[in-house]
Image (cartoon, helix red, strand yellow):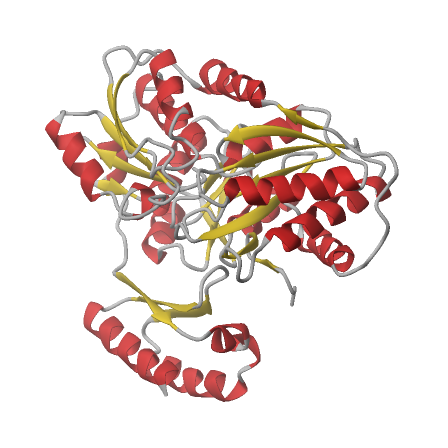
Length: 438
């Protein structure tokens, strides 16, 4: 088990688990990693809007520069922008300072390689090894450059490669006070859409709070009020997408995976006729995909796990129920703004009727509950033999259900998913809550 890294980089409450010194040491370690691999001694750093973002990005930059690697600061951008730029520019790596969908008091560090993919677990092990080592700074220091002009390259990509003329379209957007607070509006206006945008100031104290992909209530209201064609909600670093249709219906990652899979299959662009989901992907989605000759490959939770499986087998599409979707032909990571444009492209250019496609999707009842636990319980979950034995008894009792019980990779909670008969799901979750509480 890694000491610092979780399922998606380093993440924690600022000045508790994650502070300036750790961020500096990550920069130092990344510099060591880059030099050992003879990579370009230049790193791009992006951030979301959190209050702590400047402090942590500066610390990582100082660690890199102190050990001879230069830094380009691209400012407030989505994770997708850092991945895109890392892939297109001559750099050794990219860094994104964000805690994604988590609360404002948290932050994190995501490391992205020079191909635009998140660091693998093996790479993170190496970074961790260097974090706890002491070695002398280099005599020749790196430089720090403000490079927010690079954002235009990302915007040009979205508008030119993915975007279409959206004249006559009313689009509502909720940026969750996060990374897309400026870029989303710029992109949609360049494409001639009429934009209604909410929660779009760089207010780091409000990021993800009752808004964005985590809470679309206000966005649904805006879509209905302004008779919008679509509403799009992002999370803090804009890698999750939740869609609101014109009738107020909400589409999460499972529905988007189904829609995109159908479209790619119709264009003979769905490699091996398979898509990648996770253990949380609704079984109804799997059955409906199977009915259309499409297989579902399940991974552990985490968009990195999804993308690594896609890479290993050259699959075209993967995603999570939470709204992470990756289309391998477009970007190396999950990019919510890009995915919203791709959805509009297939609706307008290909005249795909989303409502007709969704008629073929029948979800299974799925109930999810997050149970707050101590960090000790969460960290020791996998090795807690007594708990696992008792949990096995509960799972056998409800053998007709599909049950998933797992620790969160970013928060001190246990996530419980029960799928099947609604009443049985309720009882099963109650039993698991009692088991955890004892």
